[in-house]
Length: 338
Image (cartoon, rainbow, N blue to C red; front, side):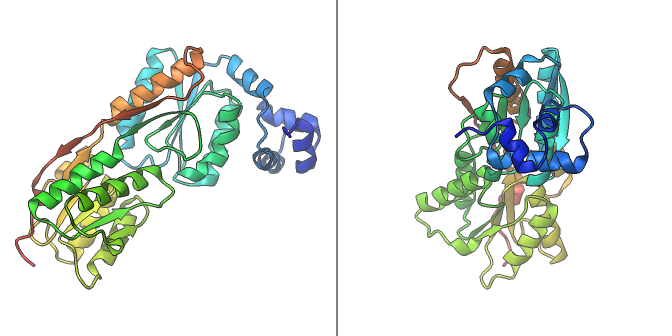
């Protein structure tokens, strides 16, 4: 049975009028009460079509955007592409940084929609973000996923062909002569990590090599996560000859750990990663990377969102998948020592 405003009010212990004030973004509701109401809305999966329609119908010229880590240089061109495309269409962008925190993401989603954004472009935390977005997607509020997909959520999305990208990168490492390749990746619930793991495994099995679960190291996709994972790699009884890092920030952390252990890339160990961004170019040796067309991806995602907002998109969810480009540099060479 579909939840009503009264159901939300009953669960939150407030009046229906107070619930309406929160839904409509009106003042006069304490932060504690607002949180109770938002929790009740989430628990009941409350998203009546009338509310969604009213949100959509009010034109504010604002679009919300949420990214998981503004400190990651990958998201610089992502934001730039989205902002440029939105501005040319007469919209302004409200940017939020979820810090890969599901609770903070939920807070931003609620705040942006209560502030009458006409659509939302989001690189979600992971599959669990479905609980933050599901009721709005069900209510036909314009939402487009960027970079990361959410299992079970049927809405427009733009992503990279991560499986083939990882396959290409690992196939290159194998062609150079590497046989034991560690993969430093993120949590299973993040689609990009899952897809890159699938590509990593495919390249290994295509080459007739055994897939070794012990060579897969899960961590957070930031510099410290890469650093910690690299320490685990170095502590292994049989070290790999190469490390494949799931993204650029992870690779920086891996490089830091290798340097502290007096391990030189590529003389002692090879290193390759996803994302070619400017700050990596100052690291010697230059890293072999699989480059994503981040700005083009975000422009395409914003265009999908503008079509949703303008009512020109069909009912069926659309997925746009971009190819990337393998850039071979010296960091992937076969070690000279060890």
